Image (cartoon, rainbow, N blue to C red):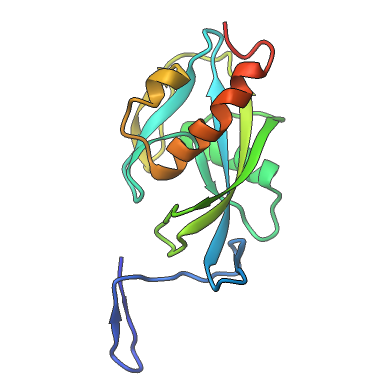
Amino acid sequence: MSFLCRECGMHSDRSILITPEMNWWIDSDDEYWHESSGVLVRDYQGRFLFFRRTMYPCGLTVPAGHVGTKERAHRAAIRELEEEVGIRVRSLKPVAAMNIVGDSCSAGSDSHRWHVFLCAYEGPEEVEVSEEGKDATWLALDDALTEDLTFATRKILEYCLARLRHEEGLFV
């Protein structure tokens, strides 16, 4: 994605989307940040749901997306879970809140404040993925780390793996 200024004609390889619908800010180092929420969906066998993201950033990922300005991180996670893989829930368990520098998105941010939640899933193994992705698959977290993950998904799993292993009842 690139940007062409209509006033001066300058071209930039980077385009930054600043919209009132998205939670964003500029930190003290002049870095542009977004807020995002993601969900680790665990089935009864202790496997987690991933799908291949077909939009930038491409790679294996979990249901996730940007938090809206009038939205709490928890609500954004519930919304993204339903939008991306059709799973409806009322509550999620918070797992982590973390900053990921170097996590670029199509709206121009290279840093995101992530909120990560856990969802126990008892539905059918086959899950339908939205137009943002394809090929839903269930993997153990250790197996997922051997895959071509998006940058943010890899950072989230590496950060959360030890915490998830210590949570009672998360692994069968």
